[in-house]
Amino acid sequence: MITQPYSGALVAFATMHGKERLARQPFLDILGADVVAPPDLDTDQFGTFSGEIARTLSPRAAARTKARLGMQLSGTPYGLSSEGSFNSGLGFLVEHQEVLTFIDETRGLDLVVGSITPSPLPPGRSITSMDEALPYATAVGYPEQGLLIRGGAAGEEVRKNLDTYDVLSDALGELLRLSGGGPVTIAPDYRAHRCPSRAEVIATLAQTMARRLTMTCPLCHAPGFGQVTIERGLRCADCGQPTHVIAADISGCGLCPHTVRIPRPAQHASPRWCDFCNP
Ligand SMILES: [Zn+2]
Ligand SMILES: [Zn+2]
Image (cartoon, rainbow, N blue to C red; front, side):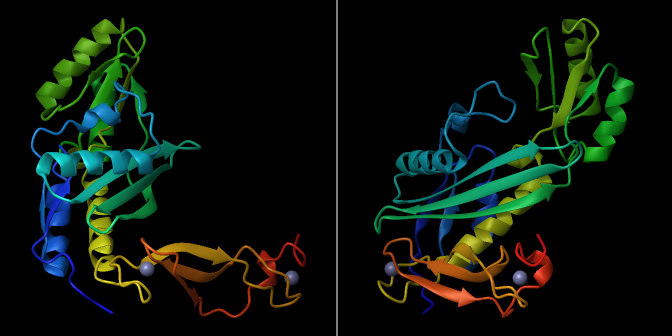
């Protein structure tokens, strides 16, 4: 069943980096809800990408805590919040994980959608001159994509909001001096208003969440019924043993324990994924 339970609702997106603009259109078009940013919110207290304040909560817990603070400041029972993490495992690929939380205090709902995508941005790099900074800046798409630089004796000095090449050059000169000639680390600024590729991911998740909020639970009729997990174990076409291949998607309710299993179209897995036939 499709409904519009949030028509006319005020939703607070806990952000000081313009994320409310990324959710405003889908929440208005799909739900008829208005998304705003709370006044005087300091989300840096939950940790920063640049590391001046360490992140102590898990991404989901941090998103939940931020959303609740935003709801309090805006005086509304509906809140949104997102939390991103960027991890470079082996070398050149950076994995971007983003979670978006929606809280509805009137119904006791706490929903999460998330994505894991390769970031198009290269990992940070050590440099010792402006000449080395320029190719990196070009590669990440500066100035639309922001940069931050880190230096000093223990890497404790961070400079961001480097909006022009002049500002970047000055800040780099300063950190190279403070670091005794270097090296200084230059890296993408992942804050949503300085990172177009991350902003795009958040906008997509906001759209996913808005659509999900139109779906109600077949059992208790709470809004937000949608995919909660997957089920692996599709059976091998040759020997019939379960494999790690996904067998079904599981939709669930944010309020009651009701779930629906939606099998994937494939009936059997190829023996190449089978631990018994192809160990
Ligand atoms: Zn339910
Ligand atoms: Zn097999």
